[in-house]
Length: 354
Image (cartoon, rainbow, N blue to C red; front, side, top):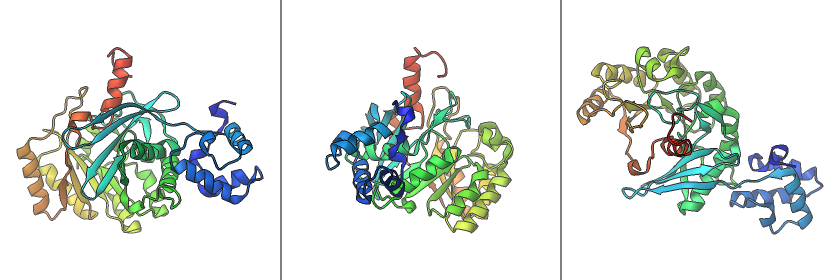
């Protein structure tokens, strides 16, 4: 029986694991033992030494396990940021970044292999979407980043390769698993989910009342600019997005964050700053300005320090809470998708998109 015919045991919640083992005639506590082994990073049934040989063989026949392999690990000499490129069971690869702050260690995880959203300034979407990640694969990004780095992970941001709300069911299951008290037990208030604005999923997300932070990648306050750099804006529009954010905020009481990459001559004018301020005030949003990372295949450049400073002043003068994201790991390709692109180009001899 190959991997495709066996179940993904790591994506099972403890109560689901109990049901699977009960069907094998096993007592309830066996599920707890298996879940504990999995939560420690054990990725072979043979290594679960407190289970009988017969049970381990039975589990092997019914379920698959896979340990992600480190294809590349880059450690920033500037700030210690670690960038991983993980090989998955099918040979695809995704990126994960571990960043250290005063408040703890944050891991930025991918939710898809590639991305279908087509943002014009992003490396992750070059080549389009390959497939969704399973809940177990997202969980392993967190767990094995912690195990390999030796840094206890306290915060998670779903801001790596892919659009989390485009992989909704697997991402929701991952959140349950990583939040589970018998697993990694990372609190929802320490998790941020970034979306380019798939508003058709906002109500369903709000209904789950997860207490996470929703970060909306706005990147432009007007339809003309946003549609030009973010195809996801087509058929939705900025005003519908702001209305969806307002509804989400009213339903959950959780403050939204607007992510805004500062692109020279594209979205950094004083008028755009004033428009952004109006949107932020309408939903009580925090604005996180992001100095643009250069992507080889893209022509965009980061805003000048002068434009950034003036942009910030306009936001602050309009009573908007604004911060500028620290540029961590700029010497290790820490921008989403860059390390994966280098691998793809190397495999293809540098010939065009993968």
